[in-house]
Length: 531
Figure 1 (spheres, one colour):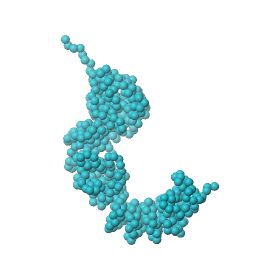
Figure 2 (cartoon, one colour):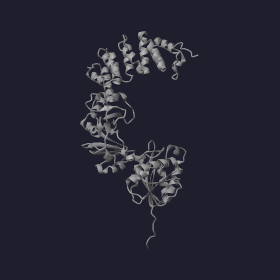
Figure 3 (tube, one colour):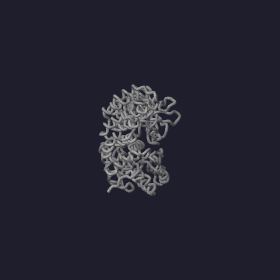
Figure 4 (tube, helix red, strand yellow):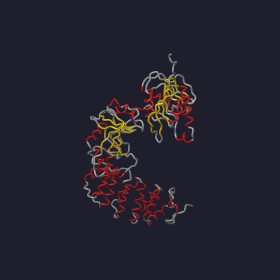
């Protein structure tokens, strides 16, 4: 038989996996009435795990309970978040005990939005004391609608904490209202006038991005991963760079004593508003981000409050935003970068399947661009993975044949699907890159396996050495190998004996480790000298 609780020392109170049964509920409710502080909070949590049974038991005791116990019972109802408790909680807004009223307001804020509850909270708000108004403002922000927004905007808050909570509530209400509205980034609208645009790539590839964007102005690499240009055109034009990871429009932070005020003022400048308006269909919704990955919730809420008057036309909302606003404090000039997010990237829509450790499409595009286009190319990717290198080479221009091999049938299946979606014809075979013979290859284009596991078990160097030796025999004279090599010293050591010339490119960040982008060419045979 299940034993009932006998006091506050019962060890099951601290067991997060314990759910009380019918026999424990009366004893738990009695214990709730005589507990204090952390102990009372713990008992509330345990009771809430009982669900429907706790709801019935709490409602049965609520009216007759002592004031302190009533507040704790209301706390249990708040934890249950059950709409069936709404009537009792609305009634508790008029309880004679202030703590009961405040906890009822908080509990109602955790229920689904309901017009009757919104009206009850608003009615209580007008004549409430300051602590109660703070609790009610917070609840109205969570479950209110147009009535709540109008009332909160009219309220002359003279208390700093109440003003803060009203600001938070208005920001929440703005978020909810915007979620039913269109908010998407468009690719075909111009910025209208030149702005400072930043185009980001993986570290090591910025110079290639600058080459891709040369027709749009005078782009220049300002770091291994960042290209800067003055630009007034469309986002679609910037996406002609297949190596770019993302695009952003930069604005210097407006000086202000308070960081939140500085960010809000910058977002409200005519230039920033123009970018949002021109590249967004509907209401621009954004989330704040920081390069170190920290959330900085207090700062984010302060910015949201500063923008909550609605005059900027912006809504701060981390759920499904159309924009990301990156706050960059590093460097000589702190600035914001407005990064469009709410659009489908048209560049890589062919990528329908993937396999572990396969190339990112921007890496595949970088390899293909480094290789260049020769119309008679016979291209072989010996570690074909999901086939992206072959697709990206086909995108660049004419070729004679595309070939791909892998030792994993799943990879070949993914490559077939991606190539078919891209409309690219290629021959795929199950074969070992270290021994498979291919006739007439002019270009080997590949991103070989190079993960930490291979390095750890010391199989990486032998694999790459055997492959490089084999590749030198497969390539026709004058043929080239373009690849990412985590062991560039290996190429330098083997190249002379294999008859290879090596052009060493940048070190490329592959997400936690680096590899060198190499362009290797097989030497042409030298004919007999003329006497």
